[in-house]
Image 1 (cartoon, rainbow, N blue to C red):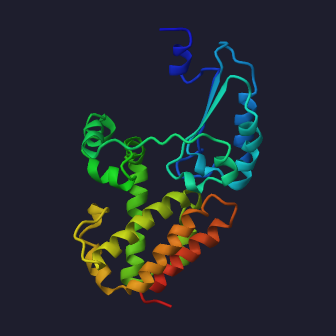
Image 2 (tube, rainbow, N blue to C red):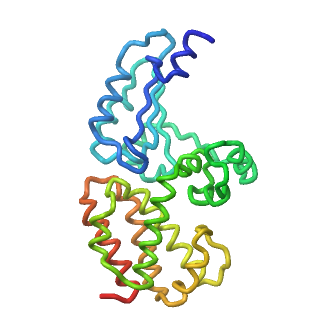
Image 3 (cartoon, helix red, strand yellow):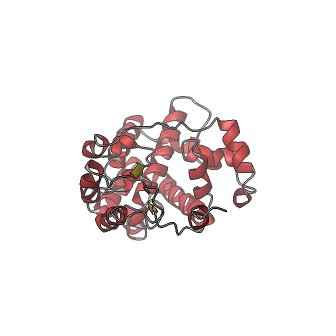
Length: 265
């Protein structure tokens, strides 16, 4: 009931600034970072300093990251700037070198599942699957459980499996896909390809358990070298998705690779 807690809980604390993507999976752009830095320059209204959180920091494109450097180098007095990232290696070295690193591990799987089970918005969902899809992070699992995000994941992966199994029109699929969601699409695709590699290596467990019946026949007919090559490409692509590159071309190239892997030219 303190004077500082009430505006914070209402999302209107004048000394707290949070910068997130406009939509999950989309990049944080330079104008948003400039506004974030400008807000941190304002005088503290409560006189106890200011806090700014940027989450996820690796969603910044290069121009956005560069616009943050001066504020990181010379933050306003009494200001704490927190950059949150599950993939800190994707941050430019110029950003990382200006920060202290504080590693926060994910909770034990049983603890995370128990916490998710108490959240009403994920009632009836496979809590273990949600956790596995986001590398064990319960808050990210809660975000993923939004019906449209789960539906988008299912549509995307089923489209990829169709390309591998029966072919299709990769260019039409690229045109119909939201390019702003490319970072998330690359993550889901990487998990899918990793599952196919696991099956080729004789493992019985996969991450995408809701697609488990569809994966073994595809894994048996796909060339292993081509699959490893695609996996390497996806790892590289994961570090590029927030760069100011042409996302249409990146997505088209990825889908053409899937089409070729399925046996089409």
